[in-house]
Image (cartoon, rainbow, N blue to C red):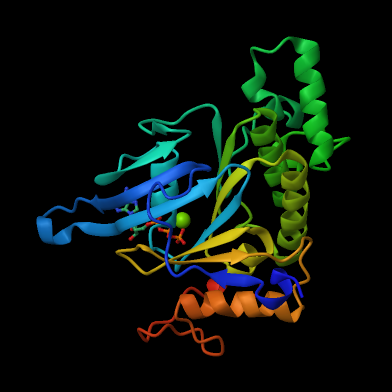
Length: 291
Ligand SMILES: Nc1ncnc2c1ncn2[C@@H]1O[C@H](COP(=O)(O)OP(=O)(O)OP(=O)(O)O)[C@@H](O)[C@H]1O
Ligand SMILES: [Mg+2]
């Protein structure tokens, strides 16, 4: 019996201490974040001592209840927001601002409506020589399944197709790391399943480092090598779950369900009522599998 068969999702009991993993490209060290309120007692304490690491080529998902600080953490890691305390380093350098070598994919409205699909995908490639740019653009349009739509404008596309444009644009810029904040959150269930499968196929071809935020536990288990589970606000990373299941993942297999349930447990969610141990109902999207 392989390890994947015996223990497809191993709990590591908390995030690795900073600096432990020599292969880490992203290091989040003791990050705290407070948004100031009008008065001191109105301050919003969002992150409280977050430690985490992401290795080169790894697909890491961050899950946590709605409003716990996932987007805040990703924005700090991507350099859009300075933390109140702590430090993020990427490839050994402290992050102080966004960096063009790392791309951020948003939930929606990431594409430029006045540009065609091909122009959107080629947007970050202005400095390339035109033939080279065209061939990169065509390559990624094909990879995301949009061949034939090169001249279409975003308004002529479905929501899923627009997200494909955004993913193609992110890949075409050939970043070392892709940050994704609920990129499929606005899509319907079936489109999301398809987008996840496609993203995994693309990731297997490209082997980019991906840090992906979602509140959908199913999504995290379908995608990730490792899932970081955040607590409620003020949040920290409570647990990390490694997922050794082969891809594409069979979402009905007992191993898959075991890992999924382990994450529900880590988040303290009762799977039948959707209630957490603290007696509050979580966002239903994080509770009802696949929704
Ligand atoms: N610029 C800001 N100023 C003040 N408070 C903020 C700011 N940005 C976020 N917050 C607060 O920080 C908390 C965490 O927000 P964040 O968007 O990071 O949560 P999230 O986990 O991404 O939620 P969701 O799952 O709904 O996307 C929320 O209480 C939010 O109101
Ligand atoms: Mg968010």
